[in-house]
Image (cartoon, rainbow, N blue to C red; front, side):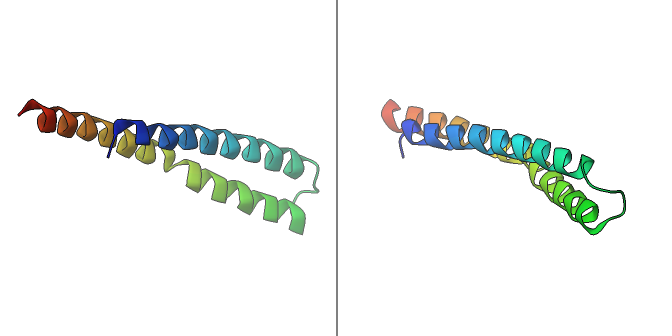
Length: 82
């Protein structure tokens, strides 16, 4: 595995973060236009909760990507060393 193969993963991570952020903004705007305690208000609230749960995992995913890059650098260095 080459380190260049990790670049698309990093770009995908950034795109996912932007999409979740924009999605949460849209759902927040939709919820603000609904009557409190209506079905639409509650559904949009559940959607925001789901987006929050997914986006809460982005830190862990970013850490795993960073560790993968570090391990890739170490493995590449060790394989070309000898």
